Length: 141
Image (cartoon, rainbow, N blue to C red; front, side):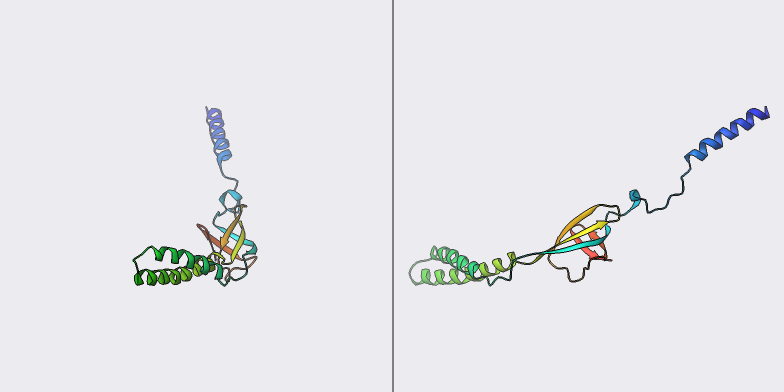
């Protein structure tokens, strides 16, 4: 009877021991973060600063045409001039904003993934720096 009891206990202990964790550390890639990483590179992509002249010309023409559709006589002339000036200002601003510098920040995540983010400002980021990604943004830790 004692032999059966002893054999049963030994079998249960062997089964339970086989299910125990091996004590591996938390640095295993399966547990690593997908939002924390290290900046691998920062690449600049952009055009030289734009004066916005082309945008002003196009905006002025479009604004003038639209302004000409309003009123008649002297009111029509005033609307045409106002439309041309307003269109020139708006067109210039649109061109300047569309030619803004862009930076591509490559980050190696703790889980081993490599992701690239497009940023408009990287003054607070450096290669080798630990960062947190939040949506499409990269921020220093």
